[in-house]
Image 1 (cartoon, rainbow, N blue to C red):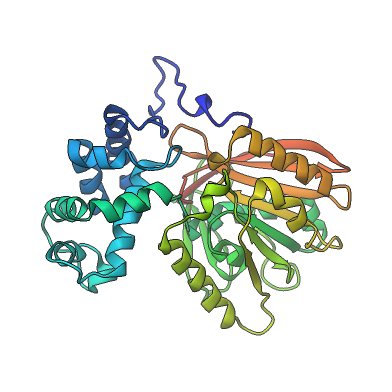
Image 2: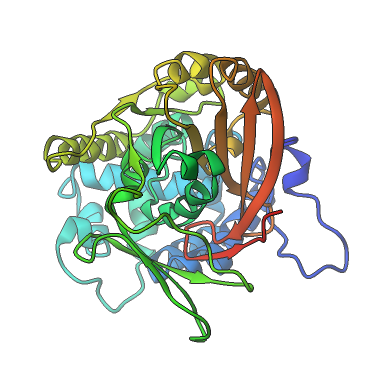
Length: 384
């Protein structure tokens, strides 16, 4: 999961039934076509996005748009960056051209109307070619800024399973590494439901009945994921020192698309309207490979200190990951630290790991679960 971020992501065993993933680093036309084809055939079905499916499969067969995509920053997933750049440009001024108005009809967030029952591909292609220069600038600077609140359904059981958190009655000093705009730090404000798809076994609900959103997560395997005690004295109540430090593969990551700023503004708006007794979320820009130790120092040491990251580590070089782990180990001299990482397995799903740091060392590492990359299902593993 975290020892090598390069070749291990794309190696496959011949004859296996694993899904062959494309090399996200590829920028040749054939490699990009594979990336967009995989995204259209596999990823978009998980997101129930027929529009993105049409875009992906269309680009996979279009030499002109594939040539445009070759300008996307190395190491970044080309489909995500392409679609984010188009949407960002469209949101900036949906009336800028006839092409923009035609494409805006397929973006309910822009048009305010249902998606029409026709193929969005022609409008997408015309818009992309007409705004090639503006998109190229976004391709060069864009970095994935995923804000998937549903991943909280994977993080919550991880926190509930930590012995130090349970012993402290659920009180946590939380530090998130990554681009969720702070929304994942509000995981104790959402409602959760874990159940087997076939109806067998018990259903597990957690959170206030009137809490929104309701995050439904299919349970797989033979073990229902753990959740914190019912709300009240034993519920997880993160301390005021909630922080978010942005994981970064290098200094060039400071150039980002405007959509990420909008998400941070959303988090700030939610923070200003928080109910009495809630705690603030502090969002800080930075490079986790260099500054993580300083961020950890801001957490209290009289409660468990927990760091977590969802689909961030893959963007950091192996050397950067080791530097970050060394810094976390040094910070654990003051008090123990639990690190929870949700990241890709390279097989189309995700793995949830817990790493414990104490007395300047990495004491243990355990696989907690396998899951859907967007938090739609979880297969919890029995812990020793």
